[in-house]
Image (cartoon, rainbow, N blue to C red; front, side, top):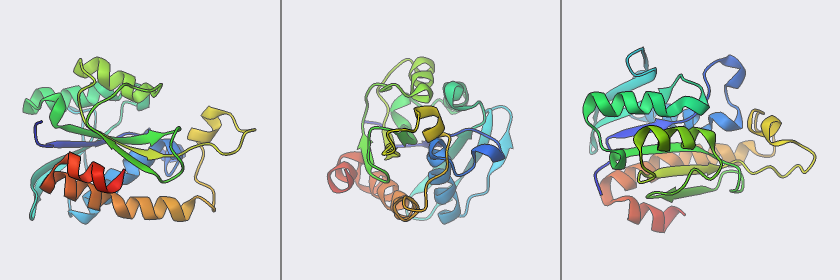
Length: 190
């Protein structure tokens, strides 16, 4: 497996989507950028917010938040991969998962889209399912709430502590993945 060169957080651009469940990928890479002291810049070539830099003990990293809206995320990721000649296996995607309990993490080396439109776009544009992903649980426990309202809604006060803990854990998962491999991180954090 290739080493991770690009870490992508999925979400939707714009104020109305900030801190919604569907934007947990954006929140996760924002946390990484803050911890690694990297500054976001809008990059039209990459169709998103992008940053890169040398991180002590890790080396050079690239972060991306696509501005193509969730369902077209693959366009932005493809643009970065083409520019830097990154293989799909060197791209780690962080995104929300309706099937996992709130705040639960699941790291995988590959897999299907599982009904997630952002992942469908990425698989289509990269031409493979063989790239790592870190899913963050946003399960709907309110039976009377439809899926769209749930994913585009903000975390409830009861969910906030779980999400805060998860976003604090993401840098540790990524750090271990970069230093000791995805398999080691999977064995400790899944």
